[in-house]
Length: 374
Image (cartoon, rainbow, N blue to C red; front, side, top):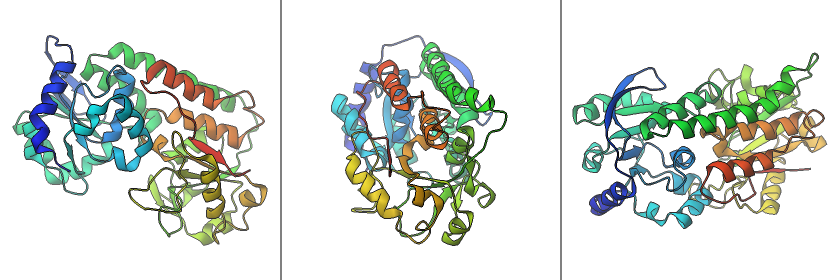
């Protein structure tokens, strides 16, 4: 979906929406260690993913899209409920020029040049594709710097640094620091308790990535991302020994043999990708009864019918998008509640999520981010 007819209009709106400031050329060190010269504060930004709105919303809640002149076309498809909440308050998002993905090879350099951005912010996972296609050099040749951030590959090492980088680009260093303080404080509500245990028993947890999205069983996480979240929350991630990288697949026989104590399925509203699919539609404003029924249906598959988690009802679903945004600490809190309810009886992840919205986000909190079978 390329909106060439809207380029000039959208760019004019974006420019007028940001208060002019004296530009200063600074050297930004991105998450890969690359040193990139950028005119800051940036006024015109291309987002490598539409879901990067999750961090622009934190840094510029009065209008998260004021500086955005183009973005990847994933937000409305991958997380339509969040997109709708932002579009209701900021209807100009519907007119933002959009482009395809780097991995799919559908990114249009000519379109990027026409948008005249000060910077393009990409997620770390796009780097392999940009390297292969030579995008960094091609865009640098026309004066468009790329800056990489990361909330997915190593979120607990990179989130604070990534927020600092974007804060530097936006001239919102104080706001980024305030968020990072909140992130670290809320994460410590879990880690302080776990680290204080002298004889911690770690239940075996299987996280199914996007359960029901396809007929195949079963995508999961290695020792990173949700796998790491499980470990931080005091569990043992079942798939770590079978998946050497961040993402991979564990077969049904292995799940039966490992017999996990707890199952957590990541879910979302993926109607755009798999209409009427078996995915669990947890998302802001989700129908919890429908989500619970879908979760129960997934547990009738052969990999799960006889395992301990299913027999005890210790089965849950959680919003998939926690896997690639600055709000991952909320997922850690909820995982901790499920894994060690006795240790975290007083922890209230929903209150944390409400505070996140009240302090940092421009949209109202709507429940629906997780559901339990029992």
